[in-house]
Length: 616
Image (cartoon, rainbow, N blue to C red; front, side, top):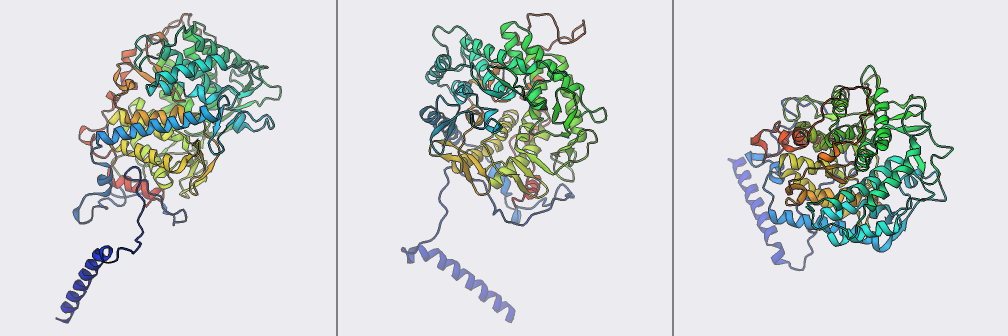
């Protein structure tokens, strides 16, 4: 009986203390009780202390460690509570407007403080151009060519957001003030995807007879943007000359051609991701030159793949064809090569592009993919794509980089939605931990190897495409988290700044142009369900820089005889309406209907991934 009396006494004491705590604010109104400040959006990302103990991932029996956890006493699981509820239309509209304001603040700050320079320094509120004092500063000089880069790169985002007056003003500024007759040595890849691609996208928008984004026409427009794109591409052509393999030099001077001391080594993505922009230009002009050199480079790289694994490395000598970098992965140096194999097929309908992509994807699955076979069932670690030796398939390191976060979006385009869901969840877990994606993350050490975040769009892009494929509100919550993090950690006096360190949240004085051309655009489209991109009936594709191009018949017709293969009998080209199985969400039948409005990934697997990155 004594233990019962003791237990009853402890229970009464606990109830008394709870009552006292409840009355404390009323009894002592002057007492300062610490409260967390309210967040502008609900459900902010959780970021544990950087010094926390590391958890070593292990195979999880019975569908993953922690299966059934999180629903104490039979209550609602915390993942379902946070992500499984409906997303109110009013909240979605507010987030759409917040994404528009984010773009507007960055764009207006650039125009006010930096134009006509290439980039905005958001901390010091000034412009940035090429580093003339240090030609070896490739981080700057590869990208900045003294041609108002940020203005050009942002053109189609203005149109997508329906800002016709500013779009028309910006186009006229580009026509009147931008010249490519510059003594600037730039990277062929960056100039192609950021500048050439944007000029072509804006030209297509201006000349679209349907004008789905509003009146984006330019009075007395005489194809000036197309002529500028042609001028730039001609200045890039010397990179394809005097190379024994057909793989282009990585850099070219816009006035003088390839520098005499040019490097003979280039990355696979840089040399093999030119086909979409060069192909569009060729087909608009009726001149095969540009598509021919870009396609020749792709075929040259493809011919150098390993006979054993079918994989490609990440750095190659353009004269000897020797692989200098033998790492095969999905991130920096390789990423957009695979992306453009598929997107070239979607846009141009060339069967050989699809065949190369299918072979590449099969080899990626065979040699780069680790973890359990199925995303949402079974035992073992979650699927992850690692970096391996191109000749042996053996693991080379234990890090992945933030550029790889594009891959779930590419998987959506081919209908491999289940695998995309798992890989996306892994990158989102890293984002939740740091409020950003470190440039390189070591999955074994559960820590950043390279801790900066330059406002990259890849996770947002995959989030947007997964939402379009599944219509699952989970991805709206993800977008809300990302938007909150950007506002909370990267907003500066005059724009948005690179995070120098994702743990310490220190800033660098740089706002790269892709923040306006991609990051803001994908966030806006995620929350703008009625955007013409989704509702106009047109089919659109995004380039690797996020520039929008229409998928229509004119890009499947060339005005020249086939010069890309030695075969007389061409495989029949795919028609626009036959692309649906590859490019649109009707091919998402691997996601069961009963899961469309629940969590895309079971809670126990989400919890497993969160543990894997040290989040919980």
